[in-house]
Length: 313
Image (cartoon, rainbow, N blue to C red; front, side):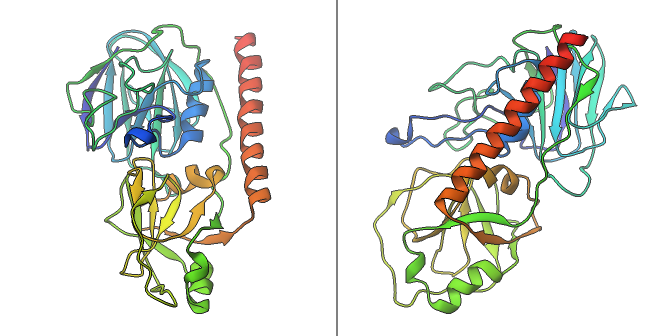
């Protein structure tokens, strides 16, 4: 059991997302950085898709009201357990009454992930424990966590800590597949998609990243009916400034689609800070598939090494 002592806001319970419900108008939700959450779960011997806590505004403090294993991945926030410094991307065991504090993140990844032994124990809604803020369901009462909230671990007291992982590199740029309306852009605009350093504006959130940079234009006006979209789709509204759909993306939209961030790079984009800049790199379907397979191999190898280490402790 943990109790939230202090939060700057927008910390939520998330797993790897809600699948199979787009037909009902329900988006995926889930962690913005699914690699970090999966790795945190692997460090504890949990299933990769167990629910954890996504923290995106700092500082954040909680108290362990019972013994519990926990793991931290994602942003390096100078975590401390009762004042003792903790390594990022590592697993630990807390005793009753100990306090975990996350400070401001170092340059690099912007979101931190906290996993508990067995996963955060909240009810499943449509097959997922992820918080969907717009629909106000999932997670803890469908909302962000607040001071005084209590959450249970599904397997408290079973964690074994003292080891960690070297995280995969964030890298740059983000790989993108051209989408249906890309060819309708002017040639100049097509070049600008790949050459511009796009700024992630303050109007960005879990629903979408609104970018600022060079204005993109179509050769002719484009009008479309609303159609299905998924996380990673890059839409171009009349302003000419792209919007990248993120984890809480609605399942439909009417803006033209000029690209799609490949699934293997969405976690990297999810760690990009507000105010930061990103670049897009054009890729192919075969390269996107290969990138996805490489990421799955990394997680599989991480899981293998963790099981070996856990067997020695």
